[in-house]
Amino acid sequence: MTDSALTSDVAADFVFDPFADGFTDDPYPHYEHLRAADPVHESPLGFWILADYEDVSALLRSGHSVEERHIAPGSPLRAINQEAYGDRPRRMDGLSMLDKDPPDHTRLRRLVSKAFTPRAVNRLEPRVTALVDEVLDRIAEAGQVDLVAELAFPLPFAVISEMLGTPEVDHLRLRELSGTLVRSLEPVVDPETLNRIVDADNELGAIAQDMITWKRGHPADDLLSALIAAEEGGDVLSDDELVAQVLLLYIAGHETTVNLIGGGVLALLRNPDALALLRERPDLAGNAVEELLRYDSPVQMSRRITLEPYRVRDREIPAGSFVIACLASANRDPKFWGADAAELRLDRDNARQHVSFGAGVHHCLGAALARMEARIAISRLVRRFPDLGLHGVRWNGRINLRGPETLTVSV
Ligand code: HEM
Image: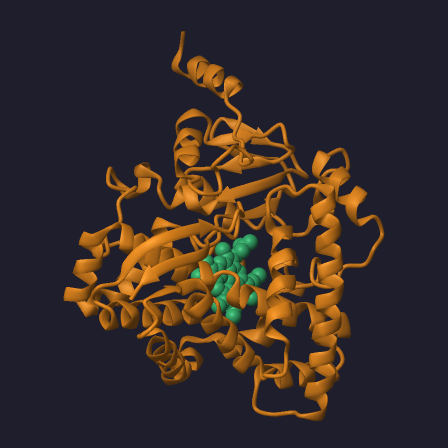
């Protein structure tokens, strides 16, 4: 038997099942199996998934589409979507830059990008430091605390609210709704969840519309006022597009960074040598964040829809396929990272080559902001509490935007 016949036999038997028991608590053994058995895998659930670093990175840079209208008419994913959504309008899905190809993507991204340059982000650093220190002061006497509730969630939420200039929103309701809406980023969801997503999307759309109305009466030097000015300019941003970008920023701005701070602190507590190194060498804080991003990706997957047949090594993926680039698997691929790919090494030279922020034209717009928030939060936390101890973690049960729902620590 030739090698390639052997590979296809293994591939024929293997099914990647993100719904397997325990997957959302620890998907890494499943990714390892996927890379070994069938790294260019066609799932019976109707999607393809790429698991190796080189293939993931190439797909993200390939120029294939992010627009779901390109999914082939016969695809099971299209049928599921149609059953749940029917013709009900959706506010965020479809109109945000994350769901648009160039040239619309280019136009939308340009409007928002000024607020996220490294220089703009640097200006926020003193404010982020003050917000972090306020939390650390408050929890210092607490004994045990849930770090997600106290720090990992409220920090990025407060920062994006301040950037947009929307202090008036009902934070708790928004958290609940966005927690539902981000499930639309899961690789597959059941019809009942899709219905809840549509409801959350509509309610969030109404909240965003209220924020915009309020802001029109209270313009200031903030991102939302700038976007409203662009919308009023007419030909650059429509009303619905404005709502979609605001929702994307709110959701991308905190549903991901919460996982980085929560998952990052957890990884350090589970790897005492790494934690000790970070305490000894504060100069490693920036690289530590890169390694934490690599080690446990806050966004585990991105997707593209093939516009034409796409060849990945010996497989041909047909046009109109929904292809998942598994960022989290790529970030642990020993063929790229070496034999210690599964270990947390805060001084890893090339940690910054992770694909946790994606790549190509959709590379995360908020990367500099997320890096800065995580660096300040994590480094100040571990320095302030030398006896920080882990008491328990509960994962949020998501496949894609995966992270701790609660992280109980003693300070
Ligand atoms: C896009 C990850 C934080 C705003 C993306 C993408 C990834 C990602 C993987 C690309 C998706 C794709 O190619 O399909 C992350 C991670 C974060 C984070 C891991 C934190 C640890 C943020 C923050 C913001 C933000 C703080 C803004 C406040 C965006 C936006 C896009 C994006 C607007 C769409 C860019 C485009 O389509 O051109 N992010 N993100 N992200 N992210 Fe982030």
